[in-house]
Length: 360
Image (cartoon, rainbow, N blue to C red):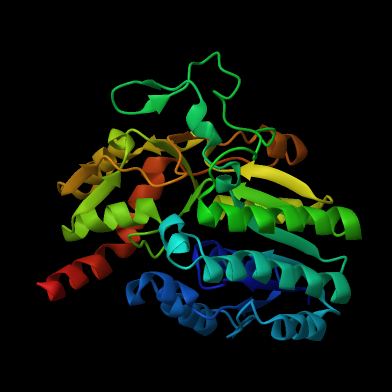
């Protein structure tokens, strides 16, 4: 039976990858040490998801391994090399704000951890497909210099602008602010490409927009759609940082992300790079997302606007998916923003309502 290794297997994209590739007939080995609870607190723990996957999926094994441990990572790859077909790397420190509080930790997880995985694949299984979940933050704040205008509820580009359909991988990553998080992800992204070119390994960097879905453990510092819906349900206060709430993000459902992984693995390339987000099919401003949350829940969100934007944060970002669709014409976005928000609401309503009642 073919094998897959998934790092960060208890997280949003990791857990979706586990389920998807088990359904495709793989034995899946997850590397998960619940660093998310350390980053964002116990409410963001991935342990419940990991425990559920282990109990429901006989073909899934979870190993408590830190990707910063090069020897442990190499041993897992070596022990499974005979049948290993794909390594899906979703483990990361994912927050702008947290990264600035501990830059050493952020870099060793995001950059050094990725290097450890690449080295293990290079020496033990160089023909395995290496899929890396990168981020649109590799472009830094360069998108903020686009000629955006205010529609009233969002910032937007003129329809005749070259990036109206979305930002492509031709955008420069130089001479702009990336944030500490963005810099560590740039290092990982470039290294994945280099291992592909230099050692002829089938690698891909998926530069994700906002990744979302019902399994997202929304936290204050990461996972904005899930956390926004959570606050609407529980009555917790929410703060929008900068841009009057008119900043725009594209959002891609975790199921669409893993479908892209499946398509790439079926016909892999070397040192591939694609922007992967909701594109023009699934994007929203903060104000528009709040309106949808209130519509779905029938509740008002208690929110405030802060004048202080996060350093390096985007005013507007929509991914151009045309390169990936050209190479993999079977791909399409299947979830829109309201679909995603309704699914998040329905999947978490009971848990969030109980927590709110217990709190008082």
